[in-house]
Image (cartoon, rainbow, N blue to C red; front, side, top):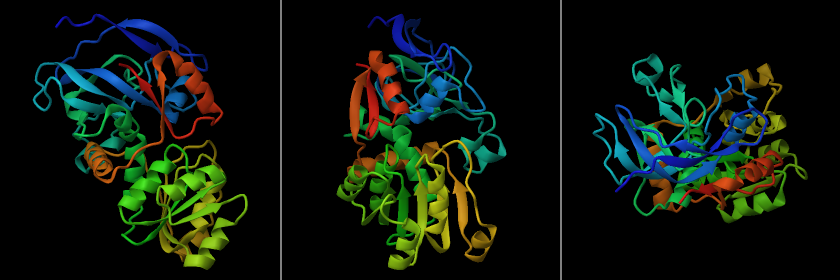
Length: 343
């Protein structure tokens, strides 16, 4: 079959400006790399940061965003022994890590100082083709279609890892603060892990969704003080995962813990939040940041999703609609996750 030479792509050419729809040459895989025909790619808030250039380490431009890409392998570079032509794969945020530093060797490859990030340091999935390192592309489980799989490559993986870092046991109470694109997946993963999930948000519609997805308890912060309520009702939660992008939610999560509880931070709003040193010490509260998970975590998150029917609330869009999607994302007008269909 004749390989295409040009592909459609959405490209960041200037920060804080609309992405440009361009035709680019189809990339050629190098040693250890594969060429993936992208069938779908989720849109993440991190993509918005790439477009806005508002993180301290800005991507170099021009750049094709997208780190929730799924598709099939159509070409192998020299030395690829893990994948075959036709394999269905996901290409996550972690494009490559060195494999030899302290972080990589101790199981924390996502903290590698030399890592390359998909859609940020290298071109990503807002295109019909992309190049990935074969050993950093993850095979998709049978029965998980591309649209369902795409949001799990980052959003699902992120909350799966965050919940694992809460050190909670089945039957424990775990708060999910913020029931948005990340949070509604966290509710499902939490239930699949056996936790009693407390969903916390300011939107009744999102809390109703959380209840339908299996949350044991819901709290609307506009009407109820979550700290006082949880302390009275259950003596505080064992753990919390904060996916909200509101700084006050972080301090609230600490207050909702019982002694010895663990708060894991996923959300990335600008700014900081006050923290009582006395409270942290005397109640032995653990506070952790959690970024996206490793390749091993992604495999487990995908298989758990396939087994337990964990699914994002998804709306689809075309590549040519990407600027409208980004505009809605800035105003929080999009429910759940948006996935670009690329054929």
